[in-house]
Length: 83
Image 1 (tube, rainbow, N blue to C red):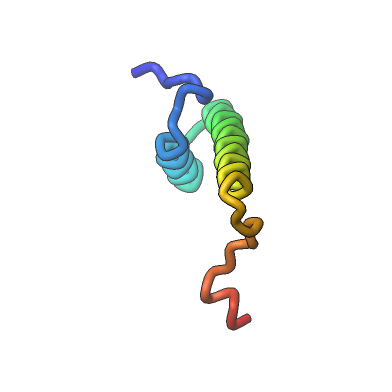
Image 2 (image 1 turned 90 degrees about the horizontal axis):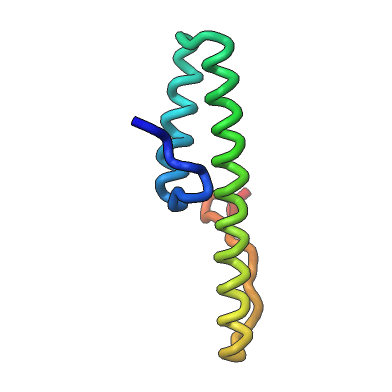
């Protein structure tokens, strides 16, 4: 099956493929060339996912500003709050 172009994947599809790539690389059974190809695709997926997250954050900021809401605050996990 041909792989979709990275830019055509949804955020969720990108994450799922990244998980598969990490598992494949961790197994260590691939050739150097195959490992490098997977690593390169993983980098592309990671970068595209970051762009999608940044776009989503920007859209949220715009919506909040239109509604006169406060600015976004950094998200902190409960585990991090006690640290």
